[in-house]
Length: 262
Image 1 (cartoon, helix red, strand yellow):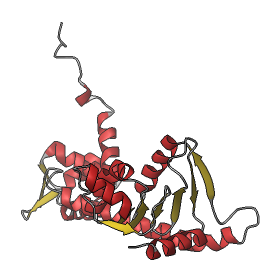
Image 2 (cartoon, one colour; image 1 turned 180 degrees about the horizontal axis):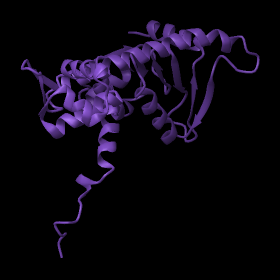
Image 3 (cartoon, helix red, strand yellow; image 1 turned 180 degrees about the vertical axis):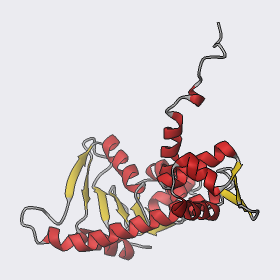
């Protein structure tokens, strides 16, 4: 049989308001803003004094909270006496909320950069913690997974060199996504590989490719001039890669790439 009218649905579960408050906090509202907004959702239109009684927010604080919600586009104000506050949908305030999230994200990225600048001397001065990281990755599957992982973290630019067109096409979709997102893509193949591609395939690379003078089975990926992943020989059954943040190796690779352009 179906549910009886007396049975509660999840919508009216006592924990639902708490869940909604948490979700609103996740998108950038403070706890008090979330509580006041949810009360407005219930009442649709009300006064500041009614909101104080319903939420427990002090009268000295309620007007600033309502002003903040108004700036986010979540509240409209009628200049009656007393003023009436009308709730608007979350969708109407979405552009403002997205801007708030973007600002918070940018702020946190700047804090991370500042922390990195301040902490680097401490790491470099420690005899127990290496200032350069490097490790070996074995097997094609693990290497490809690591390449995708590094590409997902790129912030500004990617330098990537492919030993063969097949490998380029494997990564073309993610490189196109990064390019659309504004990431600078410097992808390259040697002239010999490009000639074979034109002779044996109808597929045309969608990303402009740098033509390299020398051909080899090596592959390398540089992310934001910070990390380097290199593979010496993709043709080997026991292929392995080296991932490093060593600035000397990164600079050498960068110089080699610029000098190896046809």
